[in-house]
Image (cartoon, rainbow, N blue to C red; front, side, top):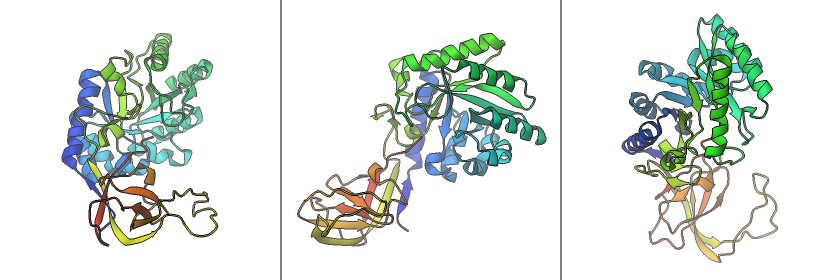
Length: 347
């Protein structure tokens, strides 16, 4: 059946070994592996849950975590919800998740109430916004940060586990020693103010791992959350390949369903496409065009890179992707398979 995502578990294992070495041995951080990139695929879950270096298994969807909560806990891993919990899913969060990321006290109150009902102690990580402007209490609003912590510390069924930050995903702000140092300084102030110890100061995702190799990860950051660097071997701050990793552990295969020579420019007045966008077309003359059986409802076309370097992706619709195979040395036919490396929308 095509299209098909081919997952090389041996290469994934090598990537996991490599990022574990960087994160734990070199960086001295606990390792949180993000499973959402493969929708918590069972074989990937087995690999991650069995790896001795992994401390946490995390996802942005409770339904994914629910599929592996038992196996994770059996292997000594804590389950983590990365996306802020919705009020409508509080019962499931407490049931399947050991640690959730939060920024709203109203949500944390609900977690405390539900945890009491389920006779559990639920851990929360308070997210701090250092300027990427996605989730978290803005770092300059210390009054809100500390009032939130004070209320959490009084709760009977919620444990204040630490603080964390997310960078790069929305505002594209690159983690640096100076902005992550704001987080570690805040952590020190919290510990001093409340005579407590923060179990976790989470310094971001795969965009932060490059700081380890440069020796610039601030002392006090003790956790990293890795998705793309595990799956594709990338440091996402600058797009560099991490030592010991490979980018072809995941290969997308799609079948050619039409192969014809046609003009490269559509004929007639150009309006908007099926997605409401007015497209731009380059005049390449008559070209050899292959249509493959995959489209925008299946994947992000801009993140696909053909293994055949002489193929260009021209665009696509919801179910079709159009390729220019004119310059390819391969003698493609209808029914042949085109292979692609993939990008990763980790955040």
